[in-house]
Image (cartoon, rainbow, N blue to C red; front, side, top):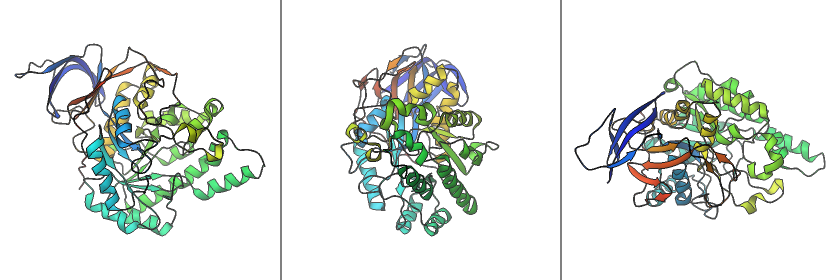
Length: 447
């Protein structure tokens, strides 16, 4: 494997930015110092004017394999991820078939080992009927990121609404539990009220059906279960100001058993954008009224929201360009998530150090990932080089998602991803690729 030396690069890590040299030897970071003169041949990278960040860890993606290859595959979406500075991902179980058995879970790991350009893990799926099988994941707690519970029918047949099964999973799981929280009964009631009006529904009705009360009530149930059983709970894609009262910031992240996530699109769009983007930003939970976006940003900054990810969910344009009620819910973001948040760095809303905390450090801590998420000697060299002075415009010609589109087309970001290193290999650099080495399975340090 090649050896690399970053010279005079601005390292953003663990709450500070400092200019230093970084030596990569093989898969790992060997040395970080003010000046390094190696005793062996290296490829030197001039870091002047650039920033070195730990690779983004996206704990919330839908890469669609197996069964939905027309939308995306582990290969295509991991390539898009790497181009966006994402070096590790955790993929959800709503594939075809759903990941409801240990055999199907193992199959996804096998697929990724042969095709993924980024590091990877996969959630075990849950249903009202597979608790016995799901709990077998306890035996793999250092090898699997967690179990996923859909407490709202976001997709397919993964809705888990049996209170006895829910209680058992929270009681007996030794894994992190990640939840999609929306109350199904409330959403059905909201839908019935709108249909009774006798008009054609549009994307602007989506946040009315999937409203703040549906989100709050479901999140409250998940938190009550987690507190009752002392479970490790991570609530995905918080969207409402109302839910934020459920989360705290008075203890260090490593001491929290209940944590919360915001997704980039809920920090970027509001319900005002349905007028121009329509079904392209239809997703679950819904993008909501502007005051929720303001509240989410405040919670990111004051640490009630612990992490930022994407909920990357590619669909074909033909699945979006249909009437609202038939349109698929989900949006592709993994190639542009870091750039989206760097846009707000330029606007002064968030610091670069806070971005790294929320998109790398925090996810490593919440999931107890081994040797990743930080720029530290001995850690894997999962790194991204960012140029904060060169703008980047999203266009159909540079979108790598298999679905081939983005709601961000035409948007110009103030920064560019220059290089992405995965396990010490420069997989992406200045618009060129090295696909000779595949990503690794994430491991976890859990007792």
